[in-house]
Image (tube, rainbow, N blue to C red; front, side, top):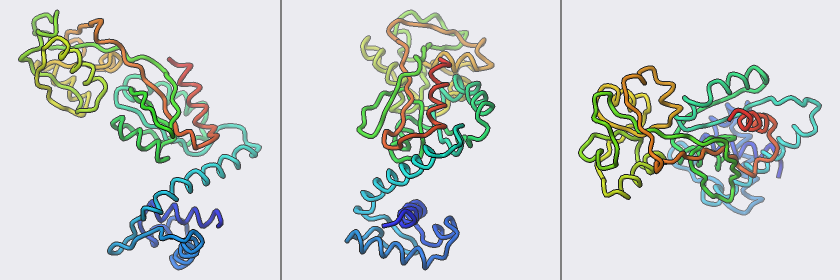
Length: 286
Protein backbone atom coordinates (compact mmCIF):
# COMPACT_ATOMS: atom_id res chain seq x y z
CA UNK A 1 0.00 0.00 0.00
CA UNK A 2 1.44 3.34 -1.07
CA UNK A 3 0.56 6.95 -0.30
CA UNK A 4 -0.13 7.53 -3.98
CA UNK A 5 -2.78 4.79 -3.89
CA UNK A 6 -4.42 6.38 -0.87
CA UNK A 7 -4.42 9.78 -2.54
CA UNK A 8 -6.04 8.27 -5.64
CA UNK A 9 -8.64 6.48 -3.52
CA UNK A 10 -9.40 9.68 -1.59
CA UNK A 11 -9.79 11.72 -4.80
CA UNK A 12 -12.07 9.15 -6.49
CA UNK A 13 -14.20 9.10 -3.32
CA UNK A 14 -14.43 12.89 -3.44
CA UNK A 15 -15.44 13.17 -7.11
CA UNK A 16 -17.23 9.86 -7.61
CA UNK A 17 -15.50 9.51 -10.96
CA UNK A 18 -12.25 7.97 -12.22
CA UNK A 19 -12.04 10.50 -15.06
CA UNK A 20 -12.50 13.55 -12.82
CA UNK A 21 -10.02 12.15 -10.31
CA UNK A 22 -7.50 11.65 -13.12
CA UNK A 23 -7.93 15.27 -14.20
CA UNK A 24 -7.41 16.41 -10.61
CA UNK A 25 -4.29 14.26 -10.13
CA UNK A 26 -2.90 14.89 -13.65
CA UNK A 27 -2.66 11.23 -14.61
CA UNK A 28 -4.39 8.82 -16.97
CA UNK A 29 -7.65 7.14 -15.84
CA UNK A 30 -6.29 3.64 -16.51
CA UNK A 31 -3.52 4.21 -13.97
CA UNK A 32 -6.05 5.08 -11.27
CA UNK A 33 -8.26 2.11 -12.19
CA UNK A 34 -5.30 -0.28 -11.90
CA UNK A 35 -4.08 1.18 -8.60
CA UNK A 36 -7.56 1.11 -7.04
CA UNK A 37 -8.04 -2.51 -8.14
CA UNK A 38 -4.70 -3.47 -6.53
CA UNK A 39 -5.72 -1.65 -3.36
CA UNK A 40 -9.02 -3.57 -3.26
CA UNK A 41 -7.16 -6.86 -3.75
CA UNK A 42 -4.77 -6.00 -0.94
CA UNK A 43 -7.62 -5.07 1.40
CA UNK A 44 -9.80 -7.97 0.31
CA UNK A 45 -12.89 -5.83 -0.15
CA UNK A 46 -14.70 -3.67 -2.69
CA UNK A 47 -14.17 0.07 -2.18
CA UNK A 48 -16.49 1.39 -4.88
CA UNK A 49 -19.78 0.35 -6.46
CA UNK A 50 -20.43 1.31 -10.08
CA UNK A 51 -23.64 3.33 -10.51
CA UNK A 52 -24.45 4.55 -14.01
CA UNK A 53 -21.41 6.43 -15.29
CA UNK A 54 -20.09 7.16 -11.83
CA UNK A 55 -18.87 5.37 -8.72
CA UNK A 56 -20.42 5.25 -5.26
CA UNK A 57 -18.22 4.47 -2.29
CA UNK A 58 -19.09 1.15 -0.63
CA UNK A 59 -19.74 0.66 3.12
CA UNK A 60 -16.22 -0.76 3.51
CA UNK A 61 -14.90 2.12 1.45
CA UNK A 62 -16.48 4.66 3.80
CA UNK A 63 -14.71 3.08 6.76
CA UNK A 64 -11.41 2.95 4.90
CA UNK A 65 -11.82 6.58 3.80
CA UNK A 66 -11.87 7.74 7.43
CA UNK A 67 -8.50 6.07 8.01
CA UNK A 68 -7.17 7.29 4.67
CA UNK A 69 -7.99 10.90 5.60
CA UNK A 70 -6.16 10.48 8.91
CA UNK A 71 -3.11 8.81 7.32
CA UNK A 72 -2.74 11.45 4.60
CA UNK A 73 -3.33 14.26 7.09
CA UNK A 74 -0.63 12.87 9.39
CA UNK A 75 1.71 12.52 6.42
CA UNK A 76 1.19 16.18 5.59
CA UNK A 77 1.71 17.12 9.25
CA UNK A 78 4.99 15.21 9.28
CA UNK A 79 6.23 17.08 6.22
CA UNK A 80 5.32 20.40 7.79
CA UNK A 81 6.92 19.45 11.10
CA UNK A 82 10.34 18.81 9.52
CA UNK A 83 10.15 21.68 7.06
CA UNK A 84 12.57 24.59 7.64
CA UNK A 85 9.67 26.93 6.88
CA UNK A 86 8.33 27.94 10.30
CA UNK A 87 5.68 30.45 9.28
CA UNK A 88 2.10 29.19 8.82
CA UNK A 89 1.29 28.59 5.17
CA UNK A 90 -0.93 26.54 2.89
CA UNK A 91 -4.67 26.07 2.89
CA UNK A 92 -6.77 26.94 5.95
CA UNK A 93 -10.51 26.19 5.81
CA UNK A 94 -12.55 27.89 8.52
CA UNK A 95 -16.34 27.94 8.95
CA UNK A 96 -18.66 29.88 11.23
CA UNK A 97 -22.31 30.58 11.90
CA UNK A 98 -23.53 33.79 10.30
CA UNK A 99 -23.70 35.78 13.55
CA UNK A 100 -19.97 35.24 14.19
CA UNK A 101 -19.02 35.82 10.57
CA UNK A 102 -20.80 39.19 10.44
CA UNK A 103 -20.41 40.52 13.95
CA UNK A 104 -17.14 39.16 15.29
CA UNK A 105 -14.69 37.98 12.65
CA UNK A 106 -14.15 40.55 9.85
CA UNK A 107 -11.42 42.46 11.71
CA UNK A 108 -9.70 39.27 12.88
CA UNK A 109 -9.70 37.76 9.38
CA UNK A 110 -8.17 40.92 7.95
CA UNK A 111 -5.44 41.00 10.61
CA UNK A 112 -4.68 37.31 10.15
CA UNK A 113 -4.29 37.72 6.38
CA UNK A 114 -1.92 40.64 6.86
CA UNK A 115 0.17 38.72 9.38
CA UNK A 116 0.29 35.44 7.44
CA UNK A 117 -0.02 36.23 3.70
CA UNK A 118 1.27 32.73 2.81
CA UNK A 119 -1.90 31.16 4.24
CA UNK A 120 -4.66 30.60 1.72
CA UNK A 121 -7.80 31.20 3.77
CA UNK A 122 -11.11 29.70 2.71
CA UNK A 123 -13.92 31.00 4.91
CA UNK A 124 -17.54 29.85 4.77
CA UNK A 125 -20.78 30.18 6.76
CA UNK A 126 -23.42 27.54 7.41
CA UNK A 127 -25.73 26.05 10.02
CA UNK A 128 -23.90 24.71 13.09
CA UNK A 129 -24.96 21.13 12.32
CA UNK A 130 -23.37 21.30 8.85
CA UNK A 131 -20.22 22.95 10.20
CA UNK A 132 -19.91 20.16 12.77
CA UNK A 133 -20.23 17.52 10.07
CA UNK A 134 -17.70 19.27 7.84
CA UNK A 135 -15.11 19.38 10.64
CA UNK A 136 -15.70 15.71 11.50
CA UNK A 137 -15.21 14.70 7.87
CA UNK A 138 -12.16 16.94 7.34
CA UNK A 139 -13.91 19.31 4.95
CA UNK A 140 -13.09 22.17 7.37
CA UNK A 141 -10.00 22.65 9.52
CA UNK A 142 -12.03 24.39 12.20
CA UNK A 143 -15.32 26.16 12.87
CA UNK A 144 -17.00 28.56 15.29
CA UNK A 145 -20.34 27.35 16.63
CA UNK A 146 -22.66 28.19 19.52
CA UNK A 147 -22.98 24.57 20.65
CA UNK A 148 -20.42 22.49 22.55
CA UNK A 149 -21.37 19.22 20.90
CA UNK A 150 -19.55 16.22 22.34
CA UNK A 151 -18.09 13.93 19.68
CA UNK A 152 -15.17 11.48 19.88
CA UNK A 153 -13.47 13.11 16.87
CA UNK A 154 -13.74 16.71 18.08
CA UNK A 155 -11.78 19.08 20.30
CA UNK A 156 -13.33 22.37 21.37
CA UNK A 157 -12.42 25.50 23.30
CA UNK A 158 -14.66 28.33 24.46
CA UNK A 159 -13.73 31.60 22.80
CA UNK A 160 -16.43 34.10 23.79
CA UNK A 161 -19.98 34.57 25.03
CA UNK A 162 -22.59 36.06 22.71
CA UNK A 163 -24.99 38.47 24.43
CA UNK A 164 -28.56 38.22 23.19
CA UNK A 165 -31.11 41.02 22.82
CA UNK A 166 -34.81 40.94 22.07
CA UNK A 167 -35.62 43.43 19.33
CA UNK A 168 -38.95 44.92 18.28
CA UNK A 169 -40.14 47.72 15.97
CA UNK A 170 -39.79 51.19 17.45
CA UNK A 171 -43.59 51.57 17.34
CA UNK A 172 -44.25 48.45 19.45
CA UNK A 173 -45.47 48.79 23.04
CA UNK A 174 -42.80 48.06 25.65
CA UNK A 175 -42.09 44.38 26.32
CA UNK A 176 -41.80 43.58 30.02
CA UNK A 177 -42.82 39.91 30.17
CA UNK A 178 -42.81 36.89 27.81
CA UNK A 179 -46.60 37.05 27.67
CA UNK A 180 -46.26 40.33 25.77
CA UNK A 181 -45.07 38.27 22.80
CA UNK A 182 -48.24 36.17 22.55
CA UNK A 183 -49.95 36.88 19.23
CA UNK A 184 -46.93 38.77 17.91
CA UNK A 185 -45.10 37.76 14.73
CA UNK A 186 -41.70 36.34 15.68
CA UNK A 187 -38.87 35.76 13.23
CA UNK A 188 -35.98 33.39 14.02
CA UNK A 189 -33.52 31.12 12.29
CA UNK A 190 -34.91 27.63 11.47
CA UNK A 191 -35.20 24.75 13.93
CA UNK A 192 -31.88 23.76 15.48
CA UNK A 193 -30.55 27.29 15.93
CA UNK A 194 -29.29 27.66 19.56
CA UNK A 195 -30.60 31.24 19.75
CA UNK A 196 -34.05 30.10 18.62
CA UNK A 197 -34.07 27.34 21.26
CA UNK A 198 -33.16 29.90 23.94
CA UNK A 199 -36.21 31.98 22.99
CA UNK A 200 -38.48 28.94 22.71
CA UNK A 201 -37.43 27.68 26.16
CA UNK A 202 -38.00 31.14 27.69
CA UNK A 203 -41.48 31.40 26.22
CA UNK A 204 -42.36 27.83 27.19
CA UNK A 205 -41.28 28.36 30.81
CA UNK A 206 -43.77 31.23 31.05
CA UNK A 207 -46.55 29.45 29.13
CA UNK A 208 -46.25 32.05 26.39
CA UNK A 209 -45.78 29.69 23.45
CA UNK A 210 -46.42 31.38 20.11
CA UNK A 211 -45.76 30.62 16.44
CA UNK A 212 -42.32 31.40 15.03
CA UNK A 213 -41.56 32.12 11.38
CA UNK A 214 -38.27 30.61 10.14
CA UNK A 215 -35.91 32.87 8.18
CA UNK A 216 -32.35 31.71 7.46
CA UNK A 217 -30.82 35.19 7.24
CA UNK A 218 -30.08 37.72 9.97
CA UNK A 219 -30.16 40.50 7.41
CA UNK A 220 -33.71 39.58 6.44
CA UNK A 221 -34.76 39.12 10.06
CA UNK A 222 -33.42 42.54 11.04
CA UNK A 223 -35.05 44.10 7.99
CA UNK A 224 -38.41 42.58 8.90
CA UNK A 225 -38.22 43.85 12.49
CA UNK A 226 -37.10 47.36 11.54
CA UNK A 227 -39.94 47.63 9.03
CA UNK A 228 -42.46 46.84 11.76
CA UNK A 229 -43.27 43.26 10.78
CA UNK A 230 -42.40 41.49 14.03
CA UNK A 231 -39.99 40.61 16.83
CA UNK A 232 -36.79 38.57 17.13
CA UNK A 233 -33.98 37.51 19.46
CA UNK A 234 -30.57 38.24 17.93
CA UNK A 235 -26.90 38.34 18.96
CA UNK A 236 -26.01 41.80 20.22
CA UNK A 237 -22.91 41.94 18.03
CA UNK A 238 -25.03 41.27 14.96
CA UNK A 239 -27.41 44.13 15.80
CA UNK A 240 -24.50 46.54 16.31
CA UNK A 241 -23.40 45.87 12.70
CA UNK A 242 -26.86 46.63 11.32
CA UNK A 243 -27.36 50.06 9.75
CA UNK A 244 -31.03 50.23 10.71
CA UNK A 245 -30.48 49.54 14.42
CA UNK A 246 -31.94 52.94 15.35
CA UNK A 247 -35.34 51.85 14.03
CA UNK A 248 -35.76 49.04 16.58
CA UNK A 249 -36.21 48.82 20.34
CA UNK A 250 -33.97 46.46 22.30
CA UNK A 251 -34.74 44.55 25.47
CA UNK A 252 -32.45 42.49 27.67
CA UNK A 253 -33.77 39.86 30.08
CA UNK A 254 -31.67 37.97 32.62
CA UNK A 255 -33.27 34.69 31.59
CA UNK A 256 -32.13 35.20 28.01
CA UNK A 257 -28.55 34.53 29.03
CA UNK A 258 -25.51 34.89 26.84
CA UNK A 259 -24.59 31.80 24.81
CA UNK A 260 -21.05 30.46 24.77
CA UNK A 261 -19.39 30.12 21.37
CA UNK A 262 -16.71 27.52 20.69
CA UNK A 263 -13.94 26.87 18.21
CA UNK A 264 -14.00 23.20 17.19
CA UNK A 265 -11.50 21.11 15.23
CA UNK A 266 -10.93 17.46 14.41
CA UNK A 267 -8.54 15.93 16.93
CA UNK A 268 -7.25 13.49 14.30
CA UNK A 269 -5.75 16.14 12.02
CA UNK A 270 -2.55 16.52 14.04
CA UNK A 271 -0.36 19.60 13.73
CA UNK A 272 -1.71 22.38 11.52
CA UNK A 273 0.38 25.53 11.88
CA UNK A 274 -2.07 27.84 10.14
CA UNK A 275 -4.99 26.61 12.25
CA UNK A 276 -3.03 26.88 15.50
CA UNK A 277 -2.04 30.45 14.67
CA UNK A 278 -5.67 31.29 13.88
CA UNK A 279 -6.86 29.82 17.19
CA UNK A 280 -4.21 31.73 19.15
CA UNK A 281 -5.35 35.03 17.66
CA UNK A 282 -8.99 34.07 18.10
CA UNK A 283 -8.45 33.56 21.83
CA UNK A 284 -6.53 36.82 22.14
CA UNK A 285 -9.20 38.86 20.31
CA UNK A 286 -12.17 38.11 22.57
